Length: 478
Ligand SMILES: Cc1cc2nc3c(=O)[nH]c(=O)nc-3n(C[C@H](O)[C@H](O)[C@H](O)COP(=O)(O)OP(=O)(O)OC[C@H]3O[C@@H](n4cnc5c(N)ncnc54)[C@H](O)[C@@H]3O)c2cc1C
Ligand SMILES: *[C@@H]1O[C@H](CO)[C@@H](O)[C@H](O)[C@H]1NC(C)=O
Ligand SMILES: *[C@@H]1O[C@H](CO)[C@@H](O)[C@H](O)[C@H]1NC(C)=O
Image (cartoon, rainbow, N blue to C red; front, top):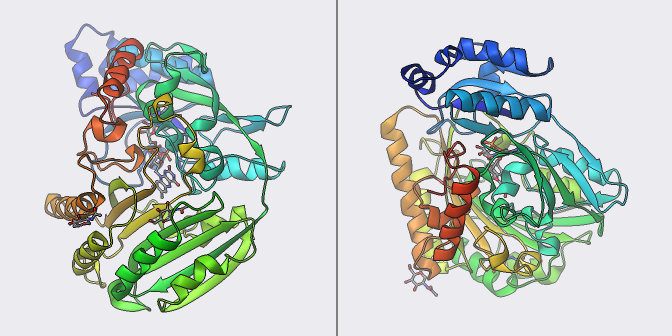
């Protein structure tokens, strides 16, 4: 089970310490662990490489380009995080916050308008806890991902059409900065802008107070249509024609993936149309797709809490498993589908990924058309998230058993090629990237926007709040 924690890392963090004038405790992970043990609460855990617990907390969703961790701390209190960061500073050790399920709590404020969410809480815990009180808020869609991980980079979710991104719900944040100080910040802080989109770069967030809302619609419905690959043009023409600029109640998503029972050789198109406040999806949206001739079409209805299972991203669904596989994603935001580019991408995807024999046969091409109303209703300049006007998030995810550099390079080549096709078809000169899906070869401009003022503002804040670059492992600003 993953937990919220702090990892101290870099390939030779501790040997660097031994060359310098750091205290003797800094020279080895064991010495450092001993010092930490004396200063943390009794419920905090410290794990060194070689132990089973260490493996468990540091195993990542993607076994590609993983950081080298020397010591992992699972804090029990906010002060444990403060102490860990302070002591790491004394030794000059770099820090990575990690998250992704488990620990911490969600508590609803008395007025029912905000909730305080612990730094390690999962999206599912937030949704379930609020639901039990008749409330909801914007979270990521995937049950196994933390609440805060997506939020710090913006955060896309089912309810964004009403209220904006996950980060748009922040009311205040408790942050432990690089110097070990704990502060509560809100909209009066100069850092507020940056925490909504580039938040991973400034500290460790131990809790968030976020806006919550009364549940508006308990009913949700989905239509899942399965098409064969020869229908690419028809499906995406219909999506552009019948599903763009719809009200907040509709979401369209599609995936290309192998489904051997349906087509043993080529990926299928799984097309989801989701409607809020309905027990069946309005035929006006579904019929144009039924007319194309799907292999199958399935109607389901239930509540908001069924969405993750329906769209195959629940805790027990395949994408949520941590199974030692490499998972690399190549994201790009676009305005609408370019049918020519969709066909070109499909053919190359099918040729390289289709069938059971490809090393990449477990891959998925994702097309996420979340409702945009709430996101676009917020001034684009008011947050570090730079891409409010893009309506579709497209990403190929290449999943494979890692065997070495050759296969990694092959994946990188294929992923970049597929992304380039979609990007070229978008009509945008610049590559717009969702930071939370980033492969890593994109530039800070791609993650945080190409406007000069955005880059300058981020750098200025970075120099003020993390001058030594302790929080530089995840999509660093420079
Ligand atoms: C299966 C799957 C489904 C996804 N679904 C969605 C989705 O629906 N919507 C969406 O927007 N994104 C989604 N994502 C992308 C997601 O936003 C990122 O993968 C995110 O980084 C996951 O956060 P985590 O905390 O679970 O992972 P981690 O690897 O633990 O965290 C990622 C990084 O976030 C930072 N971080 C995490 N917690 C803190 C904290 N408390 N304080 C400071 N920094 C912190 C750290 O830099 C850390 O390296 C999905 C990803 C996966 C793998
Ligand atoms: C659905 O797909 C279309 C396809 O072009 C897109 O423009 C739209 O914004 C998507 N989402 C919604 C909620 O309509
Ligand atoms: C769609 O993509 C093709 C191929 O990249 C390109 O030639 C065309 O200009 C694109 N169409 C639009 C409307 O951008």
